[in-house]
Image 1 (cartoon, rainbow, N blue to C red):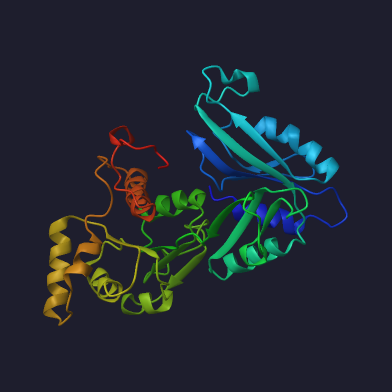
Image 2: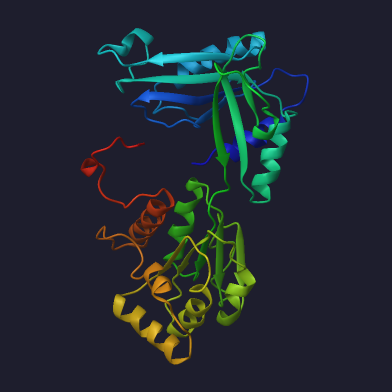
Length: 335
């Protein structure tokens, strides 16, 4: 799950003057690791945790160390070296054969980067952050800040930089029973979900309690009402030819990260042929971007299985992957 919004909410709601939460950020990895740099874990003032930086091996140790950081108020860099055959020396048993660098820092909700990041994510704007995790004493303080606030650092400083981008929007056109598990499975991914359907009886909050937005309008007005932003992911699954026709007409020209159509390939070809007969010029690029039938070939039968195949197919290109089995990779998983 994308826990960054939860971390920000916790930081912003923590009263000033109380014991500060401690943020653990995975800043560097040499060799293998379950998580990549940028993974975060927040240890709250009450000792609760949000997020993760490993597969569950480091978290308990980090929580213990976070108490010391909270007490001193000083950031601390922790190195977990699991490159030896017996990494049980750390008491964490990673078995990953890598070196993991984790920065622990006390964080206040009043920190400029916290409010700026929350505001930019709410406005769906990317924002660059910098985490200084090694520096000459007195040169620059360790911790997270806006990249624009970093200033000059010495050559022996180590800084992890990343651009925090808002998660993709998932636009589901169709509010049938098979759309319900698709919306539900998207929630733990942190993807905002919009449900759009011409039928008011189907597109309801009772049927889609996890949806962020529900719209009801005629099929030929739905896309304009939804106003997809560039990089959105759209799935058309109304099961009605007369609805899918105007939806695809309006979606094909848009700059979407993903466009899928439920149903057999022959049905998709019939819809595209109908659009062409109506005068729509469909470019080869637009045609190649349409995933029809939608989803990966998982042998899916039930609505939940279909939803899994759809989300897996969407996720792969977003990460620049081709959805092949990991055992076929010749490079590291995170390489």
